[in-house]
Length: 266
Image (cartoon, rainbow, N blue to C red; front, side, top):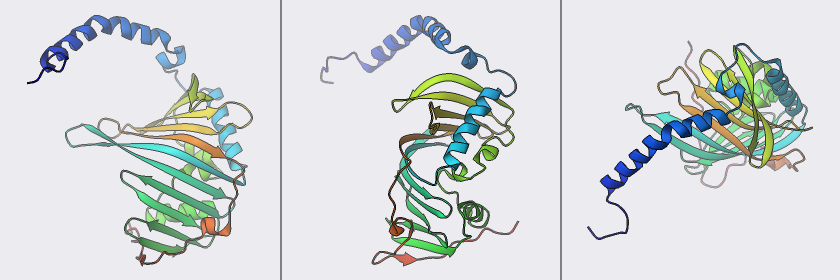
């Protein structure tokens, strides 16, 4: 083959493996030394400081009458071979309490808009121009429960929208601790880690008077190879401007209406 100025692939791989063998022990030791003590060995039980930070964050968000948030999200899928494949999407969520919600998601596996105007819930797929609308209960919490239990639909960031988000997040948690300080998207945060019977989850909460969640990672431990779902907040707006059209769906020309498929009775 033409000379490219690089080592042949086999020789390059051998060189890299040799380098890693020589560097491995020292590098791992340096990494372990750099980790905070709380991250090197997980404490038993639940650290009250960790739950205090989560409670302050969820209470603060519950007190916001309106807000919008933009996120970058990654979902891991495990193939039958055991290999992990990652899919990404971005989302924008607009909330006006007590009864308005709009969520738009675009990415590898999803192109969808979610509307709730206080009376009806609509899901719209712009690419295929299909939409479905159903009457829904009148508050955010009632609508979220209805969508999950009757339609098997989970709204983006739904758990954090509930007024009792703290209770939902802490359900069945057996361990929790403060990992340390971190920086997410240029914002200094407290990094917390929790464990429940089937999942591990981490949350990064902004320091200061506005303790907003900035990152969330959920690891599913009861599935092979423990796939993860992660959310990174790229923008919070606690003073957004909404119009009635923000939350109301109007079918575009050529859109086709379909019906939601109800969950089978168990």
